[in-house]
Image (cartoon, protein in one colour):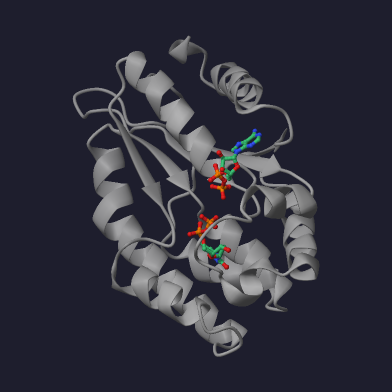
Length: 212
Ligand code: ADP
Ligand code: TYD
């Protein structure tokens, strides 16, 4: 991929790094899969990842989140950061350096939104990530009203305790909509999945016209 700021020449160019964010049920996993299929058809080598991961810290997060209220916001932050650091070191950096494209379902913007909504300082969360987190090329924030997100996931077997309380998710959504990072693009998550995908694709090729 020829683009300013990417290593060129003999070394293989760094792959694209795309993130999907949004509240639970906003349609992230659905869009990750659609975009991955499309990029693979274009001949790109695509790796899809998600956070929390299936690693030891990710498993610990899932275990604790089933028992609502048992973890302080600070402990939660530590666990998500450990899980993410492991993901960056083991999966994200190596794949990007090998020229692969990464599509990631949740990243540090989720920590800003969810742990920020539990009262932690956004500046402090950002500071903790600056030390290790690769900055993505593009972040799609899928936006849906909390009632829509919850309706879509009402049949999900695992209940993440406080993660899914309505008032809490309203705060989370508000933080997602407040980001002014140049990579963050808010996309309406209410239309049908195919229409959202078309929008995502058009925004992506606008930024990376060589994908067309
Ligand atoms: P997330 O990963 O953000 O939690 P999912 O992609 O798993 O969301 O979608 C949650 C549920 O909503 C799934 O059952 C999925 O099939 C459905 N869904 C996804 N996108 C849409 C959409 N645009 N419109 C209606 N339902 C959707
Ligand atoms: P996830 O497995 O993505 O759930 P879902 O498939 O329902 O979207 O994430 C589990 C929960 O963890 C989700 O409610 C959001 C929360 N979370 C945080 O609070 N902070 C974070 O940094 C991340 C990555 C997730």
